[in-house]
Image (cartoon, rainbow, N blue to C red; front, side):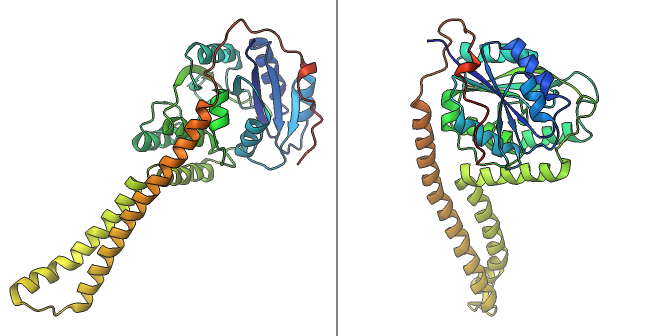
Length: 327
């Protein structure tokens, strides 16, 4: 049986670019079904997407993470490609990315951005991307050089084991950490990255979304590395307790008295808190292993991506109707 390929294009007010993205994907992947997920657009995004031949679906809850969660739940495909609808990524490389997924086989292929022009990144975005990627590398052993890329291809088993919880732009970080946590095979392919076309406006807010991503990384560190996370907190409490308590102990050794009893009690209480925090970390580590086992079993419930024979065109007559009811 021929493998199925689907493309997901999240869009919010991308009338200036979405038509070209759909046509470029169609040229690169004629066998794929292309879904444009309209994220409460107020312009002609829907009309442009339909005119280009895409299947349009609607997700009224704003945020790219909401779109990804909806798409991953709705779409069944052996390979699922996601790409932003702003025409900043080189959609002509889509075929190469899908081929690489099947040839690996890999569970995730990331389109690592390489600037086609010097102005492709907004001021500060390149530095922020490197800083956040470095933070994930330090915490999770990241082998991906472009953690925030929105151009990726996933296997079916990745999609069905991925609990998409993010609401907005931090979803790419969540995708990367999921692959690292389960040690899923991942590959990168360099793709061109260029300016938005005239009339298209970026929805990414540099500082607000950067802060959201950083908070997500810290939250993922707490959930995915609970023993280490709590060990750091316990270490801080231990240092405070020793700073307060050692002078009291030394004084007791010399005089046999404890004149600063309140300080001794406080130091003891802080040390008890440190021990409790450390124990909580070890308990949460057990729960983490249980979650990872469940996700791994869900992942193993599907076969590895395999091309089998050459892709055959898929008729849109077999695709779900674009007149789906909104939630």
